[in-house]
Image 1 (tube, rainbow, N blue to C red):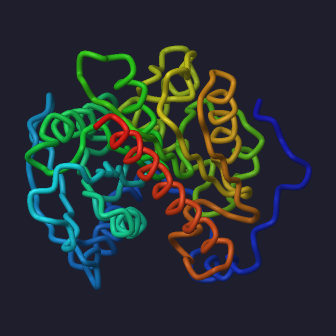
Image 2: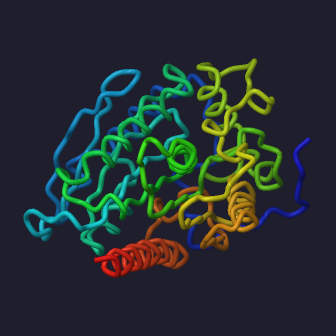
Length: 339
């Protein structure tokens, strides 16, 4: 049985107006097509590039399940022929069931702008039509391609950050695990950023129990998403919560979190994924990892993307940007020291 809390943390007062327009509700399986339509209309290349100083290119990468589209954003200020700038590989949110490579991309565009980094976003296939391992494999194929083509893309392969939000946080974490485990792949990661990651299929935490019909991502929505991802079905029966779940499907299942790159973990205090993100960071600490953990008071899922002008949202967005800046500055210094 999930642990329970007698009094779930309250939402930040500046964040609660969102629920007047979008009341908390579970996402049932039959709502997935409409959810995709809404999210795809809200996240387009045109909107992503609005007032942004980037050139955009699209490529298609060969993967084990077919072609994988990626978007490449190059800062307009980047000097021609540069090969030493950093790169960010960003994986979008959507519970494995919706979203696209432009969903909430403004955050990572901000990081790229302030660090003069290349930004790559990946269009992985979605569940339930394409269950695990397809989304994971799509991301891995794209990440390997990016790493192997660093010279032609114009970045330093030793300065590659993988980042993701929600479902993308899951996929980003599993990219780091796989890069560590498959050293022959030669994927070298400078850092890992997990933003409110969907990390654990077991759903036994206090924060998950608190999310029963509460917040922007409810416990019921999480059940729909995990069933779709693990089984190719949004209904029961499901492998969710059983022993037959790979660490590359649910990174919280990993028994060894050592030898992962420096990591940022951010999550709201009043959201379903709070406890699994805090536990993941704590286990990384115990394994000798370097982790910066933020738990934002009163934050619900994706609060800083949905209401970016709230004070707690500004703090969250600034913390992520500052961490990325510091990471790349340290990597640049390390590279320079080797010259």
